[in-house]
Every structure is written in C-alpha cells, then in structure tokens.
Image 1 (cartoon, rainbow, N blue to C red):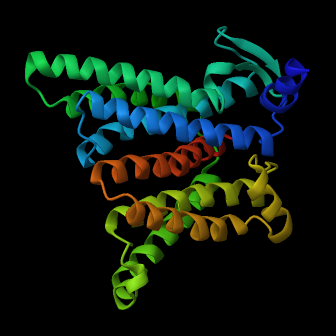
Image 2 (image 1 turned 180 degrees about the vertical axis):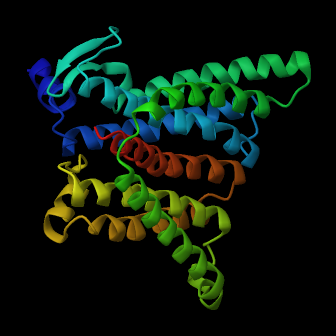
Length: 286
C-alpha cells in the first residue's frame, strides 16, 4: 500500500511529467518549511550573517539551478542522458538529480559545500567569504550557461518574455515611487520587496508566454485550476495577489532582520528559479 501510494503521488508525476498534485504539493510545502527553518538555525549556529551580502553571494546558485534544470530539458528533448540516476520518462531519459523537486536538494547540497569551502578559504586568506562563495557559484553558472547559449534559437519567445518582464518592472517601480507613498498600507513596498515582486512577475511573464503561444501546461495544480478558468494572464493576477501579501507578512511578523532576509530569499528563489528555467527552456525551443 505504501509503495503504491508513493508511486502514484510522488514518483509517477516526475516520470510522466503530469505536474504537481495536492498530495505532493502539501508534502513539499511542509518539507520546505521544515528545511528552511533547519537551515536558518544551522547558519545561526555557525555564525554566518544573513544579510544582503550573503543574499548577493547566493544569486549565482539560483541561476545555476535554473539553468541546470533547463539543460536537463534540452538533454531529454535530444534523447540524451548524463547516465547517472537516470530513469525513463515520458519526455526521454531523465536525470532524477536535475528535476523538481530533487534539484532543489541538489543545489542546496552544492551550495552548502561551497559555503563550507568559502568559510575555510576565508579563514586562511582573510578574503570575505561572500566573494569566494559568489565566485564558486558564478563559475558553475557560467559553465552551464556556455553549454546553453549555442542552443538558443527562439528569439520571439526571448523578446516577448523580456518585454513583459520589463513592463511589469517599470509598472511596479512607478507605483512604488508615485502612488505607494500616499498610502500607509503600501509602506512595505521597499526597493528590496519591489525587486522580489519583479522576479515573480518575470516568472509570470515566462509562464504566460509558454501557455499562450506554445503547447505547454502549468504544472502546479492551484494555478492550473485558476488558469483553466481565466486563461494564462491569470498568472499575473495570482502573483500580484500572493507575493506582496507574503512579503507584507514576513515584514510584519518577523522582527529579526536576519530571519526576514532569509525567508525573503526563499520567496525570491520560488519565483526567480522557475522563471529562469522557463526562460531558458523556451529560448532553446524545448
């Protein structure tokens, strides 16, 4: 019974690419909260300051994870495999370390190892560990990017996604500058929060492009339901409804600056990571 349950709700959706369902979504959500809490206290235990420098040092790892995921999409479309922990899927041979949600664990372990190495080098060299951490992630991200660039072919998708993202970024920052100061309830719309919202609108722009002009489908069951009712443009409405509320709650309920920064990092990853994966996948025409 247990094996069949796991197979149906967790394994088959990955192998057959049927998207998320209420069972695995709830499970992954609980695991995310538990893992995030554990990582936060682990960083505190080793006295790693969770500040904006730390956040900037982690940026290459977000790009690395997204590009690895899209590169796996490319390999599947070419019926190729890395021949490591590979299973047969509906789209071709699939490396289980590079598909969601396992890729989050893969990148987390790589980042954790890079952080440990950076702290060790920093103690010897006296260089800021954040610069070392950034450099390790940047080298990995550039290596994968160099493998992706030769396969970029769909410039219509690229231009549309970037245009939509630029429009929303301009609209959000214009709202922040001219309208938000007039209303107390929008005081949470700091530059940092505005950038995070822009990252999610970039994700919405890539999703809208994929669903409106290409034969893709939304993998997350709740957005999939809303999109079935309102169309692909509903992604913009969902993001504008959920993300600012999440940021408002983080600012209001978490008095510790480090904890606020850490949980905002998670919100950023949940938007920018999938958005970049969609962007590179569409750009490569897979």
